Each structure stands twice: as C-alpha cells, then as structure tokens.
Amino acid sequence: MKIDAAVARLAALAQASRLSVFRLLVEKGPDGMPAGEIAERLGIAPSALSFHLKELSNAGLLKSRQEGRFIYYAPDFKAMNALLGYLSDHCCAGSGTPAGKAKVCCD
Image 1 (tube, rainbow, N blue to C red):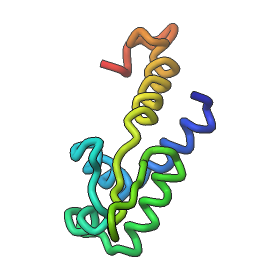
Image 2 (spheres, helix red, strand yellow):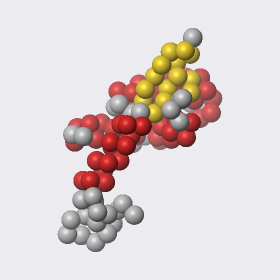
Image 3 (cartoon, rainbow, N blue to C red):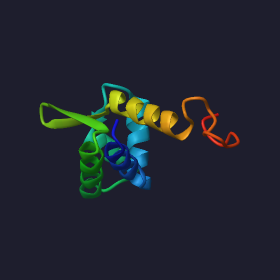
Image 4 (cartoon, rainbow, N blue to C red):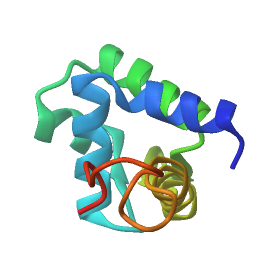
C-alpha cells in the first residue's frame, strides 16, 4: 500500500460517525446492511449518513451493491487488512517495536 492510500483511509476513519459506521459494518460482516438500517441503528440522519458512506467508499473501505430498491454497504476486508498491515509494517517495523525505540505500539 502506498502512503497516500493509507492517509486517505485513515482520514476517512478519523471522524466519529464514520468510524461508528465502519465498526458496525465490520461487526455485521461481508453481507453488510442497507443504508436505512445503518442510519436507524446509529441514529444518523439519512443525508448525513449518505455523506459518510461516500467518504468511506471513496477511501476504498466500503463496497456497495444494489438489491431491489436497497443499497447494501459492507466493509472491504481486503482494504482494511491492507491498512492494518501497512500500519504494522511501518509503525512497528513488523516486530512490535519501532526501530531503535522502546515498545510503544502493536501489542
């Protein structure tokens, strides 16, 4: 993963509502859920949710599919794992300890 993609994905998650949406969808799994159910479960207005879903999708963290009149959103687990791998490899030099420093991350 390139640094620009990592920054875009981290920026998309660096907002409380978007992080809540992403966490809910990760818990739901690869089948995802329709936008209306996401809005209801999280208490987010549909117009605000639409904006947040767009931001997460543009960052490559969500997939969407049309089923009838509903749009289902699901996490892109491959993208999520790539981001986690990038952070582990570059934050902790892949070993749990940043190069030349005391252990501060990746426990």
